[in-house]
Image 1 (tube, rainbow, N blue to C red):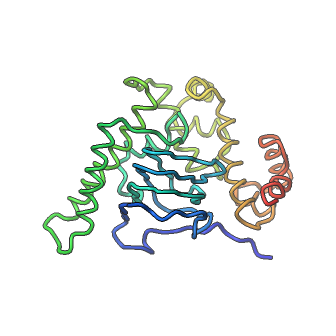
Image 2 (image 1 turned 90 degrees about the vertical axis):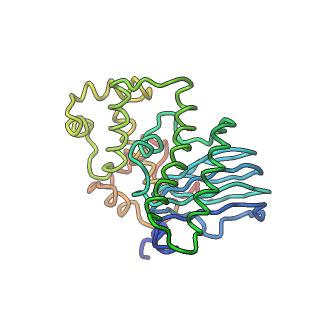
Length: 285
C-alpha cells in the first residue's frame, strides 16, 4: 500500500496575494474540522474575543476560553476539535509577509507555544488593526501604493501579536543576553535542518561557536541539552508521520535522514518511551 501524505494546504489555492482574513461573528458551533488533520504552508493567527474553542496542534490539545491569542506555524499538523459561540479574528499570512524579528518571536520563543490572554491595550489595538486590514483587503478598486499599504497593515497586526507574546514571555523587559540569542539561532537552524543535520557539533559549527558553549547556552535557557532538542524535533516529525500517514517505519526513517531504520526505531523508543509501531497502534485505537 503506497504511503499516504499529510495534506498540505496552500494560500495560493485561495488567492494570489498570500493573505486571508476573516471576522468571526458568532461562528457556527462545530464538533469536527471539515479539513481534518493537515499542515499549512503559511502562518495562522487567531484572536478570539468571545466563546470556547479547542484545537489540536502536534498532539497537544489547545483550549481557549473567552479572549485569547494563538498562532500556528507553517508545517505544524493541526485541526479544529470544537468551537462554541466564537467571535473574533482569523488571519492566514504567507511567510514572506512576516517580519524576521517577529518570526523569531513565534518560531523560537522559549516559553513554548501556548495561547495567551492579551492585556486590554494590546487587545484594543489588535481589534483596530484587524479591522483596518480587513477593509484594505476588501478594497474594490486599486489604490495607489495598495501593496505597500497592505504590507504595512499586516506588519502592524503581526507586530501586536509578537508584542503580546514577548510581554508574557518576559514578565518584564527582556535583556537579549548572548546565550539567549544563541539559543534562538540554534532552534531556528534545527527547525530548518533537523532531517539533514543531527550532530550538536555541526550546529555549533554553523553558529561559529564551540559545541560546549552551544550546549551551555541552550541548557541555561531551556533546561535541556542540545541533543535533547535535536531528538525532540526528529521524534515530533516522526509522530506526525506515524499518526497521519500509512508510511512504514523504514519509509519514515528514510524521510528523516536515517538509512538504518533499526537505529531510528531504537532512538524513537528511547525518546518517546515506546516503539514507533506501538505509538501508531496506541494513537489509532
